[in-house]
Length: 339
Image (cartoon, rainbow, N blue to C red; front, side, top):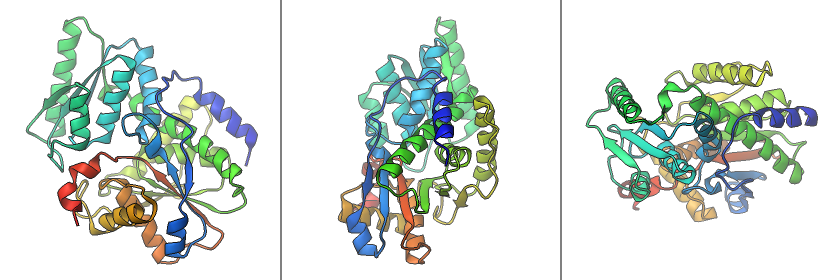
C-alpha cells in the first residue's frame, strides 16, 4: 500500500469544484451483536447512512462534487428525472435546497407509487415535481428537454442531469474520497494486515471504491450486490472507471475481476422486496438497531449474509458493509414490512 499514492489521489480529486454537504467522516461501526449471533469475528458497517443531509446516504458524497459542478457552470436550476422511491432524487433535492438552486424533478411510474418516504420529503422541501403516467424513458427525457428549453427562454440556465457525464463521474469521485476515508479508519482499528472484504450496492459508488483499491494497492476484495437485473452494470462500470481515470490522469483501469458482481439477490425485479431482504432488515434492526432500506441495502446485506451462511470467510477476514442509506423507503414499504 502506498501512502504517497493515497495523498496524490486525494489531491487529484480536490482539483474539482466541491460544495460541502455531508458530515464526514462517517462512523465505521463494529457490529458485536451480529458477530456473536452469526459466529464471526470482524463485522463492520461503514455508516454512510449517517452522512448528514436529509437522512444521509451514499449520494451525499456524490452531490458534493455534482453541486460543485452546477455552481461552477453558473446554473440556477437543476432538472432531474426519477421515480417516487428514488434516493437520488431526495438527495439531489436536498443538496439544491442547501445550495440555493431550484430543483425540478420529472417522476415517471415506478415500482412503488406510495406518496411516502422520499416523495414526501421532496414535497416538504417544496421542490417542483412533475408526475408523468408513464415509465418510458424516452418520453420522460423528452419532457425534461422541454422543461429545460422553457426555462432557458425565461432567462434561466438549467443543468439537465442527463446531459452531463460529470453527473455520473461525480459519484465515482465521491467514493474515491470515501475509500480514502475508510482506509484511514481501517488503519485506526489496526486491521491493515487482515484481508478486507467490502460489500457494497452495485453502481457508480463501488467503481470509486475499486479505483482507489487498485491505484493505491490496498488489496481489498470488493463485492457489488446488484438491486437490478443484469443490465450491463459491469461493462458500464469498467467504462466509467476509464473515463474518471482519464479525468484524474492516473491510467488506472478496471478488469472484470476487480469487482465481484452478483445479480443473485435482486428477486423478481428492482424495487420489489424479497424475503431475503426482509430477513436482513429484521436481523439488523433486532441485533444492532440499524435500519436497511428495502430496495438497495437490504438486498446487498442479503448477499453478504448468504456468504456468511456458506462459510466463505476465514477468522481473520474483516467484513465491511457500506451502508448507503435509503432509510426513508422503509416507510414507503410499510405494508410489506409489517410482521
